[in-house]
Length: 353
Image 1: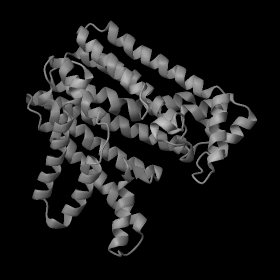
Image 2: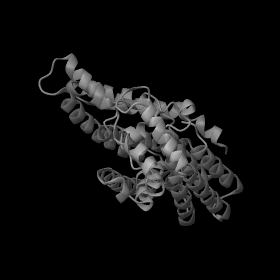
Image 3: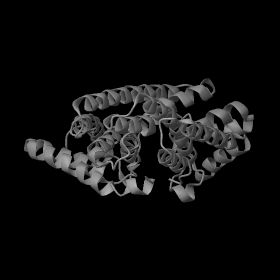
């Protein structure tokens, strides 16, 4: 199966997501319905649905069949993604998401609209955190709705619990790293965050959840985990390159990661290997959203001249090669399965958005 075949399932995933909110709305007392409508709008606003498609891929790799049965589980990963994005946007003080306001900002505007008491921002964050939490029951319900033997569904929920715990550990470390001086954050610290916060829930766990529901053998699950962790870290390093403003004309991104003060590999490597002038240029914008476009461009130039951009690209290439090597050596995958995962690896790291 080619990846394009999986993409054909996107309308069915969107339908499953919409129906889940519709059911919850019908079953909820009227005061809660406007909030569910906010959640629905946020989740259905857009996104590549890549994690959802990887659930379908995992199911296909385990069964060698069309992955229709795994559509509810694919929708589950999108509920989880909304949960993570809502909370991440609050932590990062982000203003926009998927072409619109972040959920907590939209809720703050709601507060202003009904002239509520207290702080609109506090209201937006409080309701936003709660709506993020409410995505978890949607996630679990969707996993349990898959038409698969009960032991497989329970195993998928157990994998989901593992994914959630590791993602939270990664977020904890990410927040901690942001509180440290740049020089106190190592490359190993950055890559551990990427492994836990991004690689597990972006690649490894979605593939494994789909495969578990399809009755995968233990060797296949091991192979999918190894592939997912290597490809997932490469994916996040690519995201860091885009989020720092490199290739911004294609990605639509700017220097958001610099403005937010993120301790990316680009920044940490440049800080350790750059000269005083390069560190000064980066330090002038790190965590400073009000820095000028010229200052951000000077920081990007410092990242280039320090060799950090080139180093990140080499790490991306090495991790991608490792993921592909693990696929090609796998005895649990068919030739078509290897081809699908190689295509997935390429899509993860060669993207412009």
